[in-house]
Image (tube, rainbow, N blue to C red; front, side, top):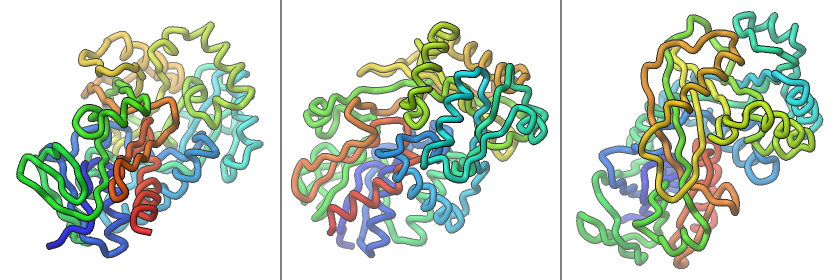
Length: 371
């Protein structure tokens, strides 16, 4: 079969480009160096985060991506495990951030609950010094380690997308790709390398100032209760631009700097997501540099457990798994799209929001590439 498009990389961004192309009735081949996707796409929370995203650069992409996830999940048999996000404010300064956020256009459909109303709705969450709680219905959560393989199978079954596994692409000179299994041809190529900053187009990546972010995560046992949605904390409000860039966000950061400097040093903000079996995916931290951190820091896990206690009012359940994730980052923005040649695109999500923006980015790239 003739390839109309070759996609390099079978993570969420590569799959998003494959889907957008397949919907145009193009013949798509996806080449992946591993036996399956093993990078950031399966090591994350599986969050499709809309609330709190940068209102100009990210929020529109997240809204569109969320809508595609709803459609695709139903067709591919991917369970949506949680809907919505719950953000309790532990300080007057964080409550002020939520109040300011509610005055923005991106807060449409959200609720700001008083402490009493929040406790009435979720009495099992005894957040320390609860001031107010933001409830947003917009966010989704899937189990990423299951969703990515299911999405891959569905693309093969329903859209005829072909996958070539355990194949390294060593050079791209469209229309020819040199691979570890010999040359492959296609009139158009999209390269989605994840955090591989060395193999293909390293010069373009250096020019874009790309680096790596390494994070620590863990899975905890079922706590014995059901969360109202994905759970965040005050620390999350100084990481998501939709909160942090409000004037009130700067005031909150000053207080956090005085009270939780070690958390900020490690780039910690609490995210808690619940699986179908009740277990909790908890994270995360953020450390930056070209070389990923190979060894986990136990102190980071201690801090995450302390923040879990502060937000839930309960000690963290026993740890079932720990792992390290890594993804590409750049100061210039949340996405990178480069054209090494007229029919070639290098596409990267240069932040930790691939699942939240991938489908929309893929649509834009394929629309621009194929007209």
